[in-house]
Image (cartoon, rainbow over all chains, first blue to last red):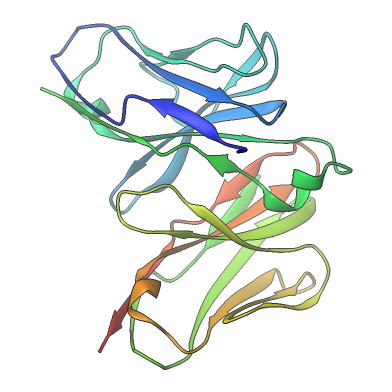
Length: 118
Length: 110
């Protein structure tokens, strides 16, 4: 089954304790992205990656890091989490090739990670 | 850049029809998507428009006018399970980015 697998689903952590949220896709998509979603603010892009070893900041990158060492994986790292990073996080992937079957579907999203930083 | 605008919330009765609008501004249009998102869950794909006109998929239809920078999603024969947020997203031709509107919350009441 074509999917984006994101872990963990729920995480409660303390301020300053480094954490990683993993994301993996099995669709050979070039483009991967991390979003956070907060009430009233919609989906906001944190970081994205156009391909292996190519990453770039989205709209709200402060306090986050990413890496793209392999095509399928795109982990999100919070080196020193703070309470304002409490949010619902989504990883998503899509193709960048207009001839791919997936072109007309846009993003496939992971199930989400509900992060609480206390 | 891209600018996408959606109304925030609407309430409709089971069995009714509801239209959700989306207006956008983009430097290079390359497709518009509609997603459905239930509370706390991931967005799921509903429809895709790249040419002007109406795309129909069962109870859901989506319309696009590129000259007006406007799309709507039409939900017919509303069911309780249609209570969700509906997100409009536009793909930019230049940078291949997909920008999302903030979503329109639809509440279906009996």
